[in-house]
Length: 123
Length: 187
Image (cartoon, rainbow over all chains, first blue to last red; front, side):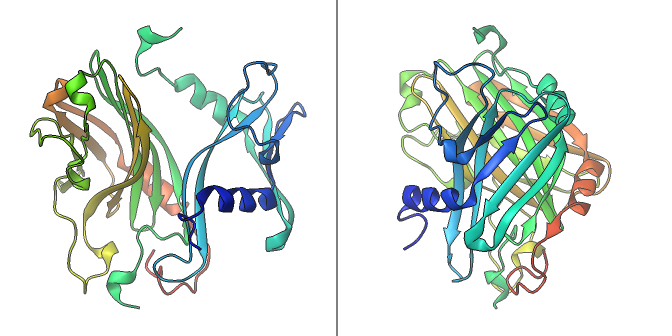
């Protein structure tokens, strides 16, 4: 069964086993197991949310080898300054738990450089 | 493995990222931006962000500005397509109107090209699209220009330049995952 034949089921199955999560310098964290399909309106503004966006992938592919996925994920709110950690565990693929940290300042600098497509349309 | 079977860009490579984002063109109703350069050992990719609003009802039917992916639906407006050109500092350029590489005996990564997809998008009275493009080869050091012409959206000509060296630095940071993949040996 190809990825594209059953995209939702396969994606969910793989993500449940991948257990991605992001951890912030102030201790707040969010994981893909929270499974937010969108940002709930009644959520506290400082509650981190991770939403899965579009993605592409293939199992087997035209050459009958391996599998790959490239998923777009979005997190709100912005992290505080300090280390921003990405942690994943995927026991089914022999990955117990691994962690990398990046400087949240890079994210904050990028956010400061963001511009709206249509400035006057901002509410 | 036949040369034409080689994937590009290869899924066996984690690309290096160049922190580049630029608004290529802006009108009252249309914005064309370029973000997220992802560099590989033999080329790079980026995302073209299109935002359109207040579309005329006629334009909403079968609206499709990407000529490289063929006519979608609706009439073939000659001015309705987005013409995208990437220019290197050495004078070489490639556009989304160029024919796709077609020589089955030449590895894909050895043929200059600009191709698109995948992308996401949609809308009703407005329209939003984020289309991934892939381009090879890598640019030389110097200005790397992105130009677009979109007459139907009031964009006669627009151009921005980024630093080609930033793309090269990102390519140096790309990581090959498995060295024994016969389908990705050159990338």
